[in-house]
Length: 430
Ligand SMILES: [Zn+2]
Ligand SMILES: [Zn+2]
Image (tube, rainbow, N blue to C red):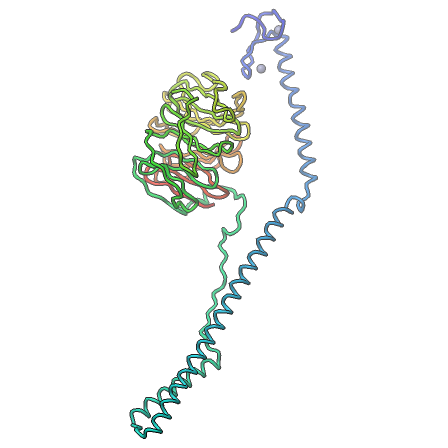
C-alpha cells in the first residue's frame, strides 16, 4: 500500500484502497473519490434520455425505405426473369408445333405418292393395303392430337428458395441443428478459421484453402510454415493474417501469395485479431502479453500490454477478438483449471465485464470464440464438445452439445456459422 493519498498534492496517510482503480486515498479524499464516481452516473442518464428521444423520433418507413426499394428492384428483376423464361418456352413450343406439322405433311405426301405409284403400276397387295391403312390411322391420330392441342404440357409451380432474400438473421443455437455443408479433412489439419464474410479460409491436407458458402474450393495454396495458431482478416489490408508459433504471415486470397511480415519480431505468438488500424497479437504461455502493430504503417510496433494489465502471472490468453473499440479476451488458468471471457476497452484494456465459463479446462487446445449477433459471443468448448452462446453483457445465453468436437467457430456473411473440428469443417445456415 502506498504511503501517500493518491489525490493530487495531498500528503496525508492513506485510509482506504479503491478496489475499482486500485488507488489509495485519505479519509477525506476517499469520500470525494466515491462521490466523483457516483456523479459519473449523471452523464450516463443524460445519454440514456437522448437515445430514448432518438428512438421515439425514428420513422419506421424512413428506416425501411432503402431496403424496400432494394426489394422492389429484386421483384422487378425477378418478374423480368419469369417473363424471359415464359417467352423462351412460347417460342420453343411454337417451333415444336411447326416441326410436327411439317413432319405430318411429309408423311402424308409419302403415303399419297405410295398410293399413286401402286395405282399406276397395278401391283397392290393385301400387305400394302394393311400398311397404308395403318400409316393413315396413325397419322390421323397424330393430327387429332394436334387439333386437341395435346402436347402433354406440364407446368411445375415456381418454388422460391427461402434463402433467395436474406437479411441480418438472428443466431441462436437451436437453429443450427442441421449441417448445411461439410468438408472432410485429416486430423493433421490445423483448426483455425478466418473469413472476410464472403469466403472462408481453412487449412486442409497441407494447403490453405479459400472456399465459398457452399464449401467449394475457390483457391488453394500449399502451406509449409508449420502449425497455424490463429488466423484473422484485415479489411483495411484486404488480406488474411496467419499466425504460426513464431511468425506472422499475410495471404492475399485472390493470388494466394503468402508473405512473411518482417517488421513483426520472432516471438511465441498465439492469437490475433484486427481493428481497422491495428493488428493485436497475444503471446503464448503464462503471463501473456498483447502487442499492437499498425496496419496502416507497414505493421510497425505500437505498444505492448503486459501482465497484470492483460492477465495474472499464472494465466494465459487463449484468444482475442476485436469488435467496436472493444477487445474480447479468453483467459485460461491452468492451475485452477478454468477459463473466463472478458470484454475490455481496446485502448486501455479496462475491464467491462468478466465471465467465468463453466467448462473443464484442458490445456491441450486453446479456447477459441467468435463474435455473433453484433455484440454477442460464441465459444467453441472443445473439452466438453459444446457451443456456448454468451450475451453482450457477459451472461450465459444458451449452450448445446456439438459433435464432432468444435475447435473453432466463425460467423460468415449474414447467416452462416462455420465450425471447425479436427476431422471436418461444417457450415450451418441460420
Ligand atoms: Zn477508484
Ligand atoms: Zn487525500
